[in-house]
Length: 263
Image (tube, rainbow, N blue to C red):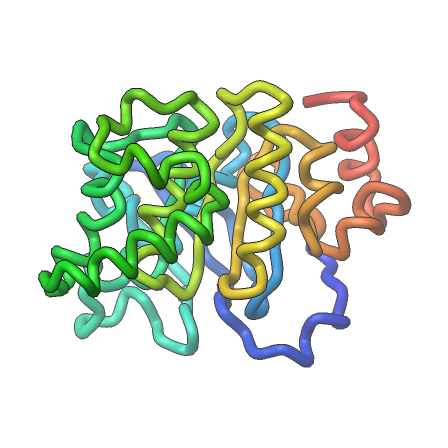
């Protein structure tokens, strides 16, 4: 299958460039010849039925798949901000600082709200309290959480609601100033009110970050993404402006999926 993509965003610099990538778990080929580009400060949604490869590709961008035995890119290249991420000189830990990730289930550390956000900057060498205070406040404001927690920073993060915990995880991610934020079904465990708050936050974060989000919620993709990529059976079927994907897709497989005929 040949995926199509709009050229409208090509005037902006590339944040992520994927060229002819195959990926395998052992002998099982999970991604087949994937090529796509994500430009800076856009929101790209990955959609498709379970097992189609969208989360696998997402985890390739920060080499999270390195942690899975037998998982590997078998051909092709992935560049982040022009750097080939599998080059010997690339440190995966540093890559994961530059390419942050928010998971499906909120996973705050068993620490205070403050310490959750300060954890990454501390690891990066920031120890002065005034500097940490400033980073924590800025990150919590960036995650639209500051006003809700500013008087309880010393309390356990587990005392927050599910939606607040997910926004805390976003604050923890942006506190180390990544260039790209990956989100793997970040709202799947949240109620509609909490989901709306996270979606508003994602739209705000686009000003500073490039965002790639995996979602099963097609309405969510239409609400927040600039472009959408549809995956099926490990292949990229179509990649285009979100409005076009949902209203006038080029491929029959895409139309069948977005109209609910399968998936």
